[in-house]
Image 1 (tube, rainbow, N blue to C red):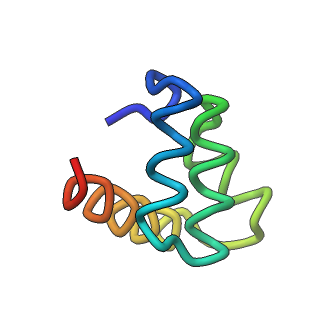
Image 2: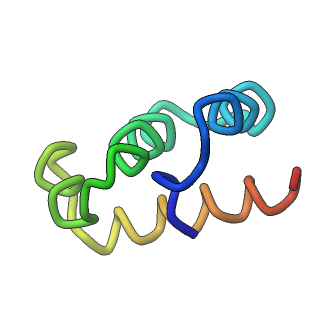
Length: 66
């Protein structure tokens, strides 16, 4: 799932309804700008495996409300 393919209203719906944590919100913001997981890891100062875990949590939350 590519977050950059969603429209702003769709992203806002997810933000309003998914109860993202702070790090998940940052991930959504950066991924919606089509940043890679490596770039996100560097910006958030976390490992790429941690970014993968955050990505999975975000995906699971979005899938629940879709």
